[in-house]
Every structure is written in structure tokens, then in C-alpha cells.
View (cartoon, rainbow over the protein chains, first blue to last red):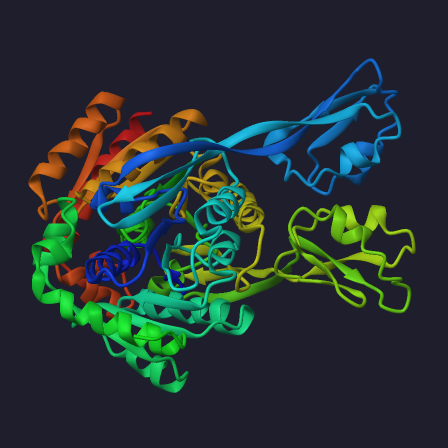
Length: 290
Length: 293
């Protein structure tokens, strides 16, 4: 069962929910638990789970390298590149690797066989263990723009060959664009974490649109900091038939534990039972035996 | 004209709260143009009551479309696609959500059955607000190219700001350090990093500061909810000192921030209060540095 934890708006508590769920699922010891931090621009789950990292692999993108001896300056490569990553100036090819999406068309279409693809580093994937939890995270290198290929590679590595019975929790990045779609795609459930404010509501509506309407995933909501703000999120969830699966009250102790890097379910045991309840609901939604 | 961008690395630290307060305060004494560069989750409009003056379609992306009547089902397209966006099972079809828009499939199709078509990926708007013109956008759910839409919004805002002789272009940025954040900070005179005192706040601040340094953008720090964790607040001051980045604002935790949000106005418009007063202090500090620069 693969559950992606997303939100639209940043800072609503995705990592809080993901790490809490991983902890209670891991403690039950019933099935393999994987936590995959797909927020590769700002991965934070490791700060709370403190995993032992046992492997680190580079994520690369194949980008063109032009052999000036073979190139006749025809310009076909620049013509086929949809991302303007190549330009021909006075018969010479200039490559802008930061614009390249790694599609390979330039190399494939070059009539002179003058282009070969070389790996350009975008970031890395780290894997390890946090107690009983299998941990993996992607880390985009500073200055790199493209998060999606890192997420793609992370998911490929972290989810390959895991048993059907395993629980994989994907901690998604904020927003609603391609990195979120890459995280959600192939999941069994989208758990959307929001806060009951106009900002939370606005971004939740878009997240439901992406997850349920565009990707066809079942969705459920966690309302975090319940009690602040207004009733807009509740009204929306009712009218759009989106189930609210858990409410986490506004509790300064959670904020303090979180700010100190303490796993909140360690510090505040009373939240374990509600999280177990959430896990049961997720399993029921996905048709997994409790 | 100065261009400031409000960023954070980590999401939900209070970028829009700070940006809206700065907009309210700045508009009282100078000519201002606003841009919301968080096109995935645009929230500045919720606090500024924009009256839309112009709406534009944005087609940043193109996707492959296969003409089934020409397709022979040979599967060369699927072989050329590195994004698993073409499925060939009794005829080929494109998964438009997975399609990267690279057109690799079109070049290898022997039947010329594939064309690239424009894909509406968002809208952008020029609106009037009580603080000045606001440029904002809506990326359609799950679309690519949010960086391109950010650039479109910023360029339009910049053009108008130049034409109108505005003093300040204030940009509310997206979270993260990737494509949209890089697009939001390009050309900025100052990136104001709004950060909360938490271990994740410190971690993410280091990465967004490194990104700003990488692109040569000057940074300053505004510590939000500064009193939640004094140890982490001190750690942030330490990061700032080590990086030569000044802490220009200290905003305490204040319930009035959420109350103002529910009222859909900048917290500084609600009158005096702990957060509002601190945000006034932030504006004073930034204005002084702007005038002295």
C-alpha cells in the first residue's frame, strides 16, 4: 500500500503526519514500513527519524556533449530540442545543460553522430534505516532547478521490489505542479494535510483537483492545527465529499516538539492512538487487511 | 526601482503574511507593484482583494497527440520516450500528465502520426488592489512549467513597474529551492527569507541561502514566530552571522496573524499588536536600507 502525503500549501504538517504514521506502523511490527521523503528541495523527515544512512547514489540526467570534430553545424539538434538547451552560433553548437530535460532527441537526431550523452549530476538518493523503518530520501543539489527527475529516481529505487503487504509513505513536496504529480503518480491513496484557514482551504481545493480529478486517486484529509481559523475547510470537505480522516488539535506542545526536532509521537504518546486509527482507515480505503 | 522577493525554503513559514504586511506598509509611502510568484498555490490574492483587470491564457507546455488513424502501432514512439508517457497496447496513446513535451516521439514516428499540441497550463492576471497593481496566476492542477509561469508573471509586473515609475516591485515567492524559487529570485535586489525557529527551518534556511548565494542574490532574514523555540532562534541568528546575512525582522507568535487571515487582510491593517508592530519594524529596517543603498 502506497500512501502519498501531500498538501498544496507548505508547512501544513505533511512531515508531521508522515513521520507519525511511520512510527506507529513501525511500532506495530506487522508489516514492512517505508518512509520515502519526496520533498527533494527541502527534505526534512530525516531530522525527526534520524536514520542511519547506508547508501548514497547520485541522480544524474543525460545531457548532450558535442564532438566538434564530427559536428558539421547543421543545427538539427537545436531544431529538435523543445527546451532550447542547444543553440548553433556561427556553425558551433552551444549546450545549456541547465535547460536540458534529458530526452535524448538531439543525440538520436544528429545526422553526424556527433552528440553523445553524458551524465550531469542533479542530486542524490540516500537510503538507510531508522529503527524498524526503511528510510529513503532524495536531495536536489543547491542551484539545480529540476526536482522531478530526482523524485522519479528516488521512487524507482525506494519502491522497487517491496512486498505487496508493505506500507510505503511518500512525504510529498508542497505545491501542485510536476514534482507533486510525480510523487502522487502510482500511489494508492492521497492523504492531504491542511490547516483550517483560508490559505489552507484554497490550496486544499487545488490538491483535491490534482489528486482526485487529474490522477483519479482516492483522497482523504487530515486537518492540522484544528481549532484555529474558520470553518471553510470543513464546509468544503462536506460539499466535495472528501472524508476528514483525522483532526490534530492546535497544541503548542506539538509545535515545540517539532521545532526541537523531536518526533512528536515520542514526546506526546496520547497521539499514537489517533494515528493508529488513521492507519486503519487508510488500510480500509485501500482494501488492505487490518 | 527595487525588486524584493519573499522566500523561505520551507513552506508555511509566513511568506504571504509578511509580503502582505510589507505591501500594506510600503503602499502608504511609495509606488508599489506586487507579484505573486507562488503560482502553484497563490495566496497573496486572498489578502489583497484583487479586482481582475486582465486575464491571459498561459500555454507553457506542449504535449504529444497521436492521430489514431495514421498510427500503425509500431511502438517506436514508446521506445523513444524516456518519461513513460507513451503506451502502446493495440495502438499507441499519450499520457498527457506524464508527457514532458520533448517531442522525441514525433521525430521517430515513421507514419508522421504524432503532433505536438498546445496544452493550456494556466492563466495569469493583472489586478488592481488597494496597495497597487497585483500580477498573479493560477497554474492548472498538476501542470508543468511553473517556473515559466513565474517568469511570465514577474516580467509583466516588472514591465508595468518600469512604465509607471514604481519604486518597488514586491514578489511573494514559492517554497523550495528548485525551478520556481530560482525563477522567483532572478533579478531580485533582495531576497527576504522568512524562517521559523525549528530544526527544519534551520535546515531549509541553509539551503535557500546557498541557492541565493549561488545566483548572486543578496539575502536578509525575517524570523517568524521567533519566540516558539529560543534555541533554534539563536541557531538561525548564528547561520545568518556565519553567512553574513542580517536578521532584519523578529516577529513573535501572535494569534492576530490567523485572525487577520480569516478576515482576509494584512495583519498590519488590523491595528497595533505584537506581530503587526514587529512587521512595522521590519518595514522600517528594509526601507532604511533601501534608501541608503
